[in-house]
Image (cartoon, rainbow, N blue to C red):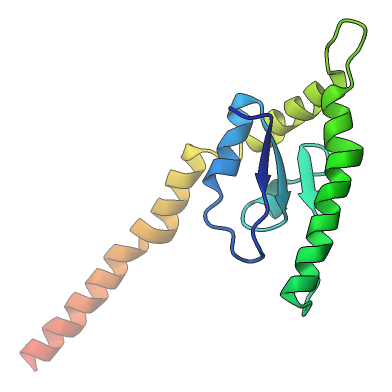
Length: 143
C-alpha cells in the first residue's frame, strides 16, 4: 500500500485508472490530475486534484501549471496534513480524509461496477450485432 497515489499524466492520456481506484481500499489517498475516473470521484475532501485543464493551452504551459499546482499541494496541504499529529501522535485530519475516500470512492469504483458496465456496454450489445450480421449474411446468401 501507499499513503498517496500520485497520478499526473498529461490530459487526456490517463489509462484506465484502476490502480488509483484500488488505492482507497488500503486507506491511501489520490493526488491526481482531473482525468480518467478522478473527475467523477473527487469531491474536494477525499484526495487532491492537481491543477485544472484549460482548453487550448499549449501542453508545455499546461505542464508548468500542473507542476506548480503539484508543488503547492505537496508543500501546503499534503505534507503538512500527513505530519500534523495530535498529542497522541495520531494524524486526525489525514485519517478524516482517508475515511472520506473510503466512504465515497470504494462503494462506487469497484469490481461490481466494472463487471456491470462491461455487461451493459460490451457483452450485451454483442448478441444484437451478431444477430444483425447473421441476418444480413443470411439474406445475402439466400438472395
